[in-house]
Amino acid sequence: MEAATTTISASDASSSATSTTTHAPVKAVFFDAGGVLCNDMPSTMLRTIAARYPPEEAAKIQHAHKGTDGGSGKCTVLWHKLRADPTYSSNDYWTEFKQLVPEIKESVEELTEALWASTKHYPTTLEVASDLKKAGYTVGILSNHGNEWLGHVITKYEMDKVFTDSELVLISQAMCCAKPEPEIYHKMISATQKFYASHSLGSIEAANILFLDDKKANVEAAHQCGLQSEVYTAKVGDEPKERLLAILNTHGVHLSK
Image 1: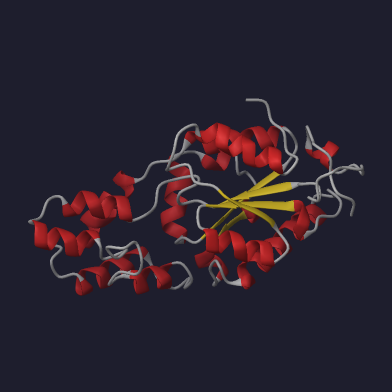
Image 2: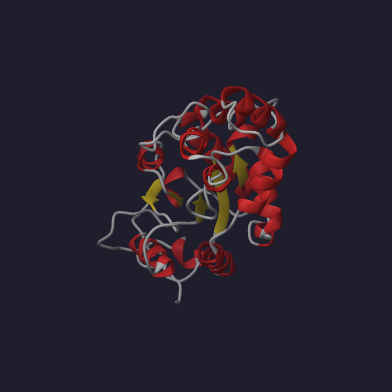
């Protein structure tokens, strides 16, 4: 496949041309969820819960999911189970969380309600995804997440009105693997190719897919699997839309501001 020139629409991106860029034409854009489409769960909620407790107990609660240095916490192993084991429920997570963090007094039901209340989304990212879809690009989600957790966010913020193709909303728990494992990217590529075939959209290869994630390790792993990939986060910094549009421009995807 020849390198792509700048593009205005997905149909333009499919045409052959001579260009100075080495990117293949982008036909599909996949977004991570936490940090890109919505806030991180359950970190935000745990900070809110921790504020109710004395300092020593608060620190243990706040850093149970992620350690003080942003690395692994006491309950990180539970997150790893939730994001990759379809049989592991949200209730299982909070039940075991309470066992590992006895300082926390809230019930499983109260913790669940607090989690739902703590969610927020980043409208700018959703707006750009909608614009991409209107321009003819395929859009999807690839997220390390629990089915129930991310499903709640998608419904609450009506993301399913943009990400309308359920076979391209790929949640690690349902896929039994997680980023940055190569398997999950290969499954995403396969799902996209099946989608193109079933909708008579022509062919699509890994190099025609752009993946955006807030974690460098996930982006690098995607690149190793043949995808175009970039680090992007909506939760840090100013002008998130301008930054996102600039990334798309780099890959030959041009949307109006």
